[in-house]
Length: 596
Image (cartoon, rainbow, N blue to C red; front, side, top):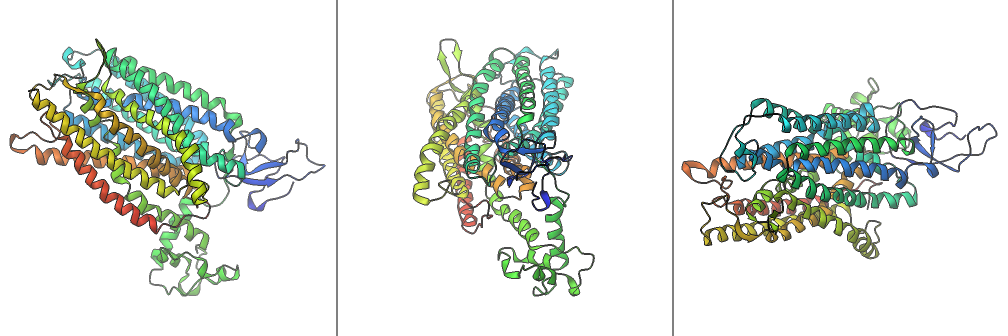
């Protein structure tokens, strides 16, 4: 067996500490002492579930990815089975006002998108991704079980609260409300550990250094999103109908059963997965953190005083990137002494710069996060006032309109992957056709169009209500087909195909390999912060426009509200965001591995 740097694998050794890391090829040379069957290619930095060397021909790749994609399809079906119709439950069964219900949905959604930062930290620093997924799934199932319990608890509330269209407020029993919100946030905790780890674990089943597996990894993000949205379409159509027309206990219970099935599927793939070997080096968190600490400590130091140790190793100052040059001071040793040896290497400084370069991109995508929050709140309330009849006596649930987003994604991703990418590749000579930032920017532009179209349709809905004298009859269906909302939902889905998938790949690819769970959690945090910003924005507008007895933009009676003004505001903010994003994208320097 030939050793390979610090991370050599021995055929007769066992690796006790597992974590997922990027994988590259090592070659196993024939040896008479080897008692294990010889395979020509093993994967460096990876082991099997028993901690033994793992071979390309019997592990990872699509064989493992299919298990993991199946888990994600089930988890997203469970999650959106709750979140997509949550505003209906809050405004109907729990009797909250439209604005309050929207704020609560946004706060919960924001929490579920920010908790992955904690889950990713735990996975990358302590448990590893596989164990984190298993533990998070158990927490997830506990939350869903309690959520189902809260919906079937006996209550003395007025039966009028059961209908989603009821305008009068009523108050359910406090124990039911307490159990509901506690279980809802337990679900958020479970999702926080599950979401960032599953996708990173799936992507790392492909070796980025192997020509064929590298191509497969590029397609993985597209087909991951395709499969996930296919499952969500079915979940939205079935679960929303059950929740609106049968009962909420069954509507919450089915997602619980789905998550149990997801955990079983994930465990079935255990023997096929590639598990990364955790090295004895300091964690990436500590390395990057020390760079910032040392740069602050040395902020007065002369930049020419580069540590002689770096020069002795043949590493010279000009090899540092010019961007964020203040971090180069982490290379310096005050008074030309090494002190206690806490001097950062150029590689560690470049890691810190790679993370810092993500900040402007992350910040300029926050408005997209606000726009993203509207499909499960005001879009749904809009649709509830319109003609949703499919046949006599059968109405399409308003929340099920969100399935149009996922249907458009299901149809557009194959077109993107099989038509647009090869065409763009022939022109640009880039493996992915267009860069990740170009893909994200295209998605942001489409989200602007979606908001403009949403405002125009809402203006027509309000005009129709006035023409038919229905302004003060909020429970009466407006004679305007819900099909008017279809284009904005489709544009919304098209924006996701570009921006959402682009953000996933970008934040996975552009962080140090040890922090890929954290990278994906950073992508999720865009939508978490966006949901919180949406909640704050709604709250501020509600107070500003609802003074002196006037109807606010988010009045309970949507026929007197002005969602169109809100959509125009978001469209304007999105234009500003797009301009800022394009500015920072031009100066962004891709990591060497992630250059597209």
